[in-house]
Image 1 (cartoon, rainbow, N blue to C red):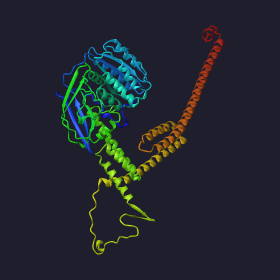
Image 2 (cartoon, one colour; image 1 turned 60 degrees about the vertical axis):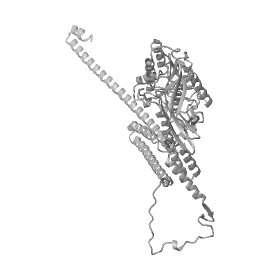
Image 3 (cartoon, one colour; image 1 turned 180 degrees about the vertical axis):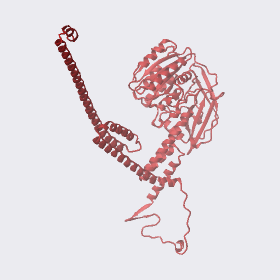
Image 4 (cartoon, rainbow, N blue to C red; image 1 turned 90 degrees about the vertical axis):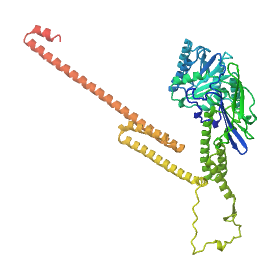
Amino acid sequence: MSFAKPLFVLLSAVAWPLVGLAGHPQGGNSSRLATFQDAGNYYFALSVQADPAGDYPLASAYEVVVLVDTSATQTGPVRLESLEVARELARSLPAGASVALLACDIETVDLSDGLIHPSEGEWDAAMARLKKRVPLGTTDLAGALRAAAAQFSDRVAQRTVVYIGDGVNRSNLLTKSQHRQLVDELIAAKVTVSSLAIGPIVDLASLAAIANQTGGIMLSRDEIQESTQAIGHHLALSTTLPVIWVSDTPLPTALSSHFPQRFPPLRVDRDTVVVGESAAPIEVDSLTLAGSTAAQSAVELSWKLTPEASNPDLGFLTAVVAEARRDGGVSLPALGSSGLRAMSYMLADNATAMVKAGQFALKSGDLESAQRIAKEALKQDPNNAEAAALLEAAKRVAESQSATVPAGKFTQTAAGTAGNVVPQDPAAAPALDSPQRQSPPPTPSLLDDTLNAGDLLSDQLARDRARAQAIETEVRQSIRNASERMRLDPSSATEVVLGLKLLLERIDNFTDTEPALRAQLRSLVSSELEVAASNEARFNERVSQSEAIRAQADQATRLLREINRNDEGLKQLVEQFNFLMAEQRYLEASKDVAPV
């Protein structure tokens, strides 16, 4: 399942930083209505937030389902931190709250046997079972969310699912309609989904989109400096803050075409953003939304609105609205103003990358592609001067080519007709003896830079080729040196193997070279590494054999020396015995020498 389109992938700034809930507007509902006008169309971004100091009906009970990702990516430090966050989250819940613990990968497993009180021993037992669970497989996030939503029991309780994982879904991929159905189910049950994005690769866009639709928050571990205990405490606190589910009340006519089409829930700790388009100037002075909390109590909120003047920095809204219109904004990851701002940065980066591709197309003579790329870049970032210059340059080159008319072997432009030579006015020609006026050099423009961008690109490509040749030469020379060193000094095989492994790492770090060249050099080094490893093994085997032979020889020498010592001692005893017998000292010989 993917909750977001490819357009909304780079959204690290969407994740809310871990800060206290203080610092928000104190008193009164905050709002802002920013606009952008483009060719008769009026785009807007509306930000509203419930009053943090407002007196909202509180829920009579709180039910929290902690959903911990146990797929294969959740290992090592990631797994340890996930366990610590889950443990601290349960400890920080208010008295009387109920909590369930689920583990999800390919399947979702209930580790707590339903909702329990975190202060009881059952929670510790559930955490112990989670700790023993081996991270394997991939994640079925849709199935996990449905399983978590099925855990709730009290209709009037405030229901929150806290997901801890990377949000990357590779099992049970959903279609657009199935995705919408899942979101509808969560909203109908008033289930808020918050998350902590943690893992080597995280899908922030998916987690932001589902949090936006259900009134949740999202934290990114990579953006947080605080401890896991602080993160768990913050997530627990967020489950107790009121969430206002907006009813399907019509908005003012100027704001009627908005996305997401279903107005997202409101929170007191972050703002809610909708974007949209209007065919007429946006004129609205107030907004009133009706909704309800988990306590089933009706709530009505009002804001005074003052449409801001068209801001060119909001030109990215054209691309955001066009993308959101595809699915009604269900996959829109604009989680508050921070999320919308992150999308603007991402679109600007995309436009810059497109301009580089368009400049290459222009230099290659593909004018149609250059114009198409420039137009698409301007859709994503209307204020991109380089994209505008690229489009103008492509048009100018196309016009100059269309004005050229072939005339036999040569060509003649539209300034003159074939066969009719336009005489030059003698008065217009400068006199031979009069100095010509030196006109000032033209001021360089961005358009000229764009027309010359192809030359710069050619120079860069030439430098890249030279660098690639230098790298290839260096690698081949290193391979020859390694081979020669092993031939002259077999004992250096271990050092050669280590050097070749380091060379492989260097090749992998040459990310700005052609993949084909890297693969070729890698193959050469790997082949030489196999030879070096084989030589190292043979050398080590010969050394081991030599050491074994030397050890056997030393042992034989020691045995011979021991035998010689024994023979010498025996000889002395025999001589002593003979001497005593010759002296007729039989008793002494029998007692002192013979027993030995």
